[in-house]
Image 1 (cartoon, helix red, strand yellow):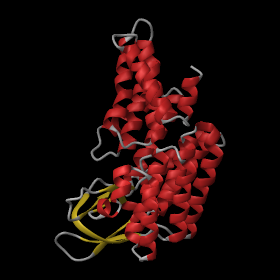
Image 2 (cartoon, rainbow, N blue to C red; image 1 turned 90 degrees about the vertical axis):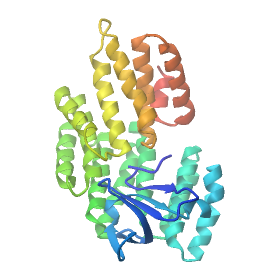
Image 3 (spheres, helix red, strand yellow; image 1 turned 180 degrees about the horizontal axis):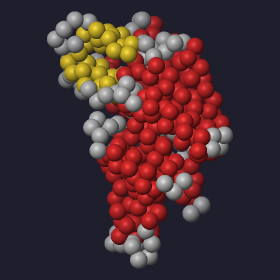
Length: 351
């Protein structure tokens, strides 16, 4: 699984030849050629290429790439095996290199989730939080767990809510940066809608409140909340309101893959729901949008990838054009093999 919401934080292995670290902020700004000194739940300290030591709040960090990551975890990186990350991360904790260690634990969790080893992934995340309770990647403990449960649909709602509320409580009592607190509030709202305790009018009102709080300072959370707002508007038949939000998000610069995938999905759903036997080309347009989630937003959450594949199957079948059966079959194969535990795989089995 790719790191999420799942996250605002993605930990990637830098190429072996890289000599400098790289930090991407939630605004889209990239701090090239810097040297990361430390990363905890409150701030990331770094030395820019030209200048003295400075810092940025953890809630403004979207991605961290350490020059030595790939070399340090070379066996795990090459094999994508979580079991090969874990011993190195543990040794680094013993050596007090918590910066590199925390990234290894998250990479191990992602590798385990990619392999369908949920228990091992959660174990790696729990070990991270226990070994380095103030790590900057602790937010990923909640994001990855939430995304895993939310990806199951309503049947995962109760567990998703428990994770979201724990995130919110820890962020509040720990006085974590404001952006993390807003993100936790967003996850609580998502879980409420998922489990059915937050009905659509209240859900939409809450999302508008979160967007207003996050706009400007925390664009990543605002964008993702806007996607959910547009989805809810579409479901309550405010189609033009939904389309306006999706289109606006598509036109923004530095939009993250999860937001972009959500917009593609939403616009595809509008097409899918507007087609009929006399307008089959609309189904083709929907299909192309769903396929863009797979092709263009490769780092988006697994739940979005699975949802796009499921609806691509529906769109291809409704379109019925050249190669539609081949496309439908290929999407079904990927859905069943790469996302077997998702709610969308369950739906496809019953289709």
